[in-house]
Every structure is written in structure tokens, then in C-alpha cells.
Length: 263
Image 1 (tube, one colour):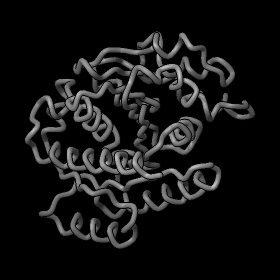
Image 2 (cartoon, helix red, strand yellow; image 1 turned 120 degrees about the horizontal axis):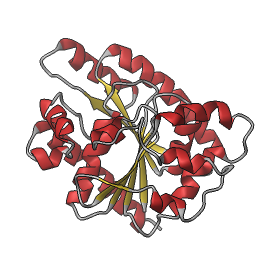
Image 3 (cartoon, one colour; image 1 turned 90 degrees about the horizontal axis):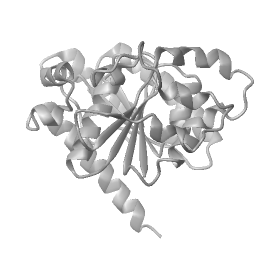
């Protein structure tokens, strides 16, 4: 099992689109994929037609056992999606209460890591969508993942948010035994606007070693796919946005292959 997370401390940067599109492309390649929604807003959950306000069971259940996760629980939280190789563990709005309850509780930052051990043989890839707030849910995502994608909108206010996220990752990496590899993913790029072009240039200059090998353009097909509740590659695999995410997926898979052959 490979675990990727998508996170940024700023909302509206394309986190859910990134998770859904990559999940679809991986599933199209024959991989079994789990999408885990850790954002109390539940955008990923809503994408596939589930209501975060009405669900009886969700990722919230994982945090109800004092940091321990019964082996039978994660499989019982799986929901189907529009793609037969993608399952979802949904979010619920009740997850917003976890920050207050996590104070002083041991092991709350490793709940997701422990939960995924009970699904290890069932999925090839897990993609985690985290909330745009540094708290127990984002910490869980960062602790569980092997790779982190940080979408950042190509506009100057988003770059300021990116600086906060990079500082957070520096702090997280000091506490990890293994460095967390992260990739900054420029999103909503519109080459017709000077602001977008200049913002992309700034990101490349400031983070030359961390920027991903893809730039995600503005693409209305993403909105059309979300309206239908299908992964974007199922709606139109040839669209500019899907092709950009396919480039990103190939580069990440290549990195994994190279790591596997290293002594």
C-alpha cells in the first residue's frame, strides 16, 4: 500500500480535485484505491453523492477508541463510488469537534496510520484529503502518508499560504524518523493572465526542488465531472486538466519505482 496525502493550510486550492483525479487515473491503471476524507467540510464525500451531515458512520468513528482502532472498523466504513476500483471512507461534520477532544489525548495523531494497517492488503493506493487547518486531522494525514501533494493556486495570496505550509512541513519533518517528501503542485493556472504567469514564476524560483513536474490548468471539465459525481478521466480523459494530472501521476510512479531499486 502506498499512501499519498493532499494538504494545504489554505482552502480553495484544488485539494479535492487533485485527490479525485489522481484516484481515477490510478484506478484506470488497474490499482485498487481508497479515498479517505479527513476534511469536516466533506467536499470529497459530497463529490460522490454522500451527505456529510446525514451519514451514520464516517472517518469520525476511527477517533472514538482512545487512539486505538479495532481491526473490524475500517472495512465497515468503506463506501462505493462511481468507479468500481475506488472506495471511500467519508467525512462527517462531527469531525470538527475532534480538535477540542484531542487536547491531552495520547495517540490521537496516529489514528489514521493505525486504521490503514487494517486495510493494508486491500488497497494499492490511499489518497487522503485533509482540512485546510493545522490540527489533529492534518497531523494524522501527514503522519500516515509517504508523499504529500501541496496544491497551490497560481495567485499571490495563495503563495503566502504556501509559505505557512512549508514552515509547517519543516516542523513536521523534525519530528519524523523519515523525511516526508512533498511536491508543490501549481493549480488553476491560466497562461492568459499575467498574475497567473508571474505567480508560477515565483513558485518555481522559491521552491525549485519541491515543485511537481506538472502544472494544472484551469479546466471547466473538472466542474462538469463533480456535478456528475464521476472521476474526471471517466468524463473526458483527453482534457488538458486530466492530461496534466496524468503527467503528475506518471512522475510519482516513476519516483516510487526508482526508490524500490535503490539499495
